[in-house]
Length: 291
Length: 243
View 1 (cartoon, helix red, strand yellow):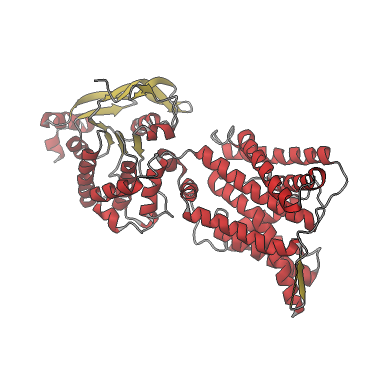
View 2 (cartoon, chains in turn red, orange; view 1 turned 135 degrees about the vertical axis):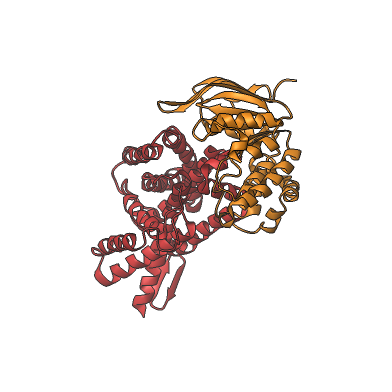
């Protein structure tokens, strides 16, 4: 009994973290048709920024996260200006953008090393709330992750579904050229998407930085998991991504509990390979949406 | 009065292959102009240049007295130059009403899209029945109506219709041509490209035939003589032989 509740708690925490990463990646994928390799590094940068605002500027923890999201939003705009828009309209532009985001990863990682130095840092827990249920304990940052991640991504899904901005984003996803002919400026939508995605990654970075150490390569693992989530849920669908994030979280929690930490990544990727073979369009998608 | 659209000595292509070879063409303020000619001779490329989806290599395009090249596709739409593209899949996951609302908002009529939608439903009663249906589930004819309706939502002064009846059955084609005639009443100027020559000649004031990226023949759309000339140009025979 306690085993199950421990697994469920762990799955909700991991799923929440992967969701914050993967939701942004999915949005970028569905509108720009590129995989943003820089997403893990952006998460890491957001984590460091939160640390600086907390420890060097002296803001409270929550204000530090909000501040980091604001700064990272600006960095997101710069990111779009430098890495996306110069390349995206060229022949093979999506490939160029992906290579550019890979380069950004290295730049951000080395930059973090230079700015913040080699010593390892960590954020304090988010609150001291503690819930004990059926033998499992969730407290502080874990609890915040369990609640906040689905809340933020749920709000995003609602914005996409209900508002005119969301309508514009969905239109661009479904038919870029016709959307342009209607008078939609793709650039504005791209900037909006990148800012949202970077903001979510920053929140993820702050939460992760409180549960483990902050280091320049802390984003690599979440990026890899988010990639599996995208494959799992069918890249481009937010609903599929939500389901995928928690499915991967559950799988990882279960395999870690059952077979140990060293086996779980192997089994997660094995599951991905099986799913790619059996349902290449993703678990929840009934058909592939063409570009 | 100056022309609404003035295309002068335009060349364009894809990579090494030239498609348009110094084509010139005008559309008057309240004129419906038809473009005829076989596929692959530059009609669609010409239209894509006009609405700034494709960059010409040389030449000028003037709309309402201003060069279009300095303006984005978005600005052109907002100034009344609206392009209904060929064979669009539309937005499969949006409903007809969402797509129309989007077209209104994207062209700068966010506040008055409801009036626009009423006008569109008056022209296309069928769209009103289908308003809650996803555009991905519409029939070919209904999809074209939705596409035209989205064009109307932008309140165009010049409406560009690229192959609106492509792939439709004769019955649906007839229905759609009646719709286009109603659209004609709502819009000042139209450029109509279609494979159905009769339909183009019936709905326009003037026509141009485009072959190998240039205008090879032009005239008023209304005479039988025109039709005979056109037939011989296209088919190497007369209209009577075709029937």
